[in-house]
Image (tube, rainbow, N blue to C red; front, side):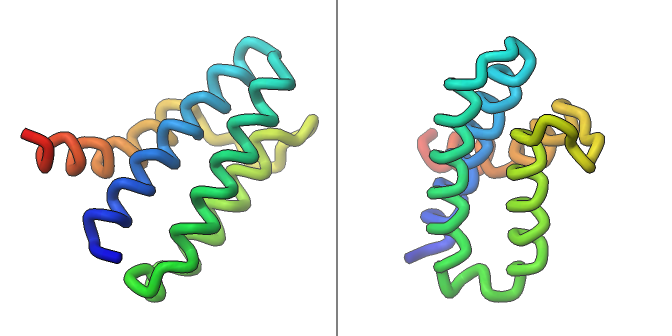
Length: 99
């Protein structure tokens, strides 16, 4: 896989995080579960790539944050905007490649 593939997967992961956050704000448990499962699948794909071996700690933390978003009593208090800003560079990179 290439760096473009990593960027694409991370941008898709960001989309699922955004879906999860919207579903959580709407108190829609079914949509939350769906977004959570899809995000975990994407994150698992990313973690398996050789290109990301140096950032496994960051990806593990990202998994903790993802899983925390679906708990009834979350340990972390991360603002939705912080999550969006984290993923924005990945999405922008993909959009620039398409132009």
